[in-house]
Image (cartoon, rainbow, N blue to C red; front, side):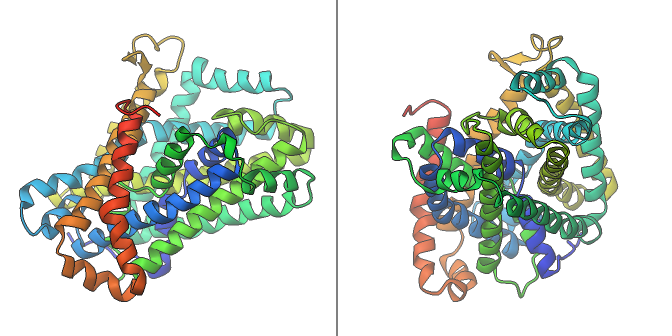
Length: 447
């Protein structure tokens, strides 16, 4: 089946929507807080330039040249061993595994989006109680919110490239940026902004541990939605006249900018009332609502806008996680788009329910695997194994398998003198970094 094509701006917004997700607004700020601010940000910017951007170009190249689903693109482009390389395309199923818990988190965001309109917690203990009740004691509410997430994402993907994915990203991505930059402009008026600026951009080298370096590499890779076939699938619909390098640069720049803006906004509010930035994953769900309580009705408004931005980011990324497998089912098994969406959505909806129940008091013992809740097992499996493996296959394929003349013809005129630097990164820097990261995350190498 012929793949629909994005418009040029539609592709940029869709690819940026895929890259900009919960990791930018939730994960990046708390990691910056935990690992000492400016030093972590500097390492992150270096790694996203030499690893993240390089891998994004490689993944887009495979999609743009193959013009098929992920399995079909590897199979079509491999000069030999096609029957083996096609299995690399099954990295697209990583997205569905991620959706089993990502959809649950989006559901939590939906809950907070409504919850903050009625009241904000006045103390950290009250904020923790709200979050713990949602996660551990209220499975019915969590399941409803998870289901709502599945339905919304499924409906958008069902509408297709032009009618659904491109259209919603043309609405949500500008809306997301307007909200975040609006909050940023307000934060300029706060005394906490100067402290946030210093915290994020003045390196504290004593906080930059080897673990922080590994986390920076990992986040620079994962934040761009690489190694799961999302960018590759979108690139199959890239207009033929579009520049791969320029498009990848714009997407990488937008992704990084939004992460930095989100960090400045959050830390401005945090420092305004003397709270600690190193609160870990609870920074957004526990610390921030408590801080915004001090602003009164204005804090309620800010909280709503912030969680609305996070919801938009989550939805645009979730769409890109589902679309690759939907396209695979359409191409390989002649599924209708509606049938493919329903089939895939039902699978990750059911597993998602099990994942969220693994955090509840009633079911956590039954749904514990290797002494970890199912939710954590799914997250660990994708973060530590599947996504780095997907990225590794991409750089090996482009750096060593795909004909050099074909890669050179596609990219050298776009990159000019930077082409040899990019190729060096793809052939040596990115593979070594990904191997090292995987070995560290699975515990073979300890730093």
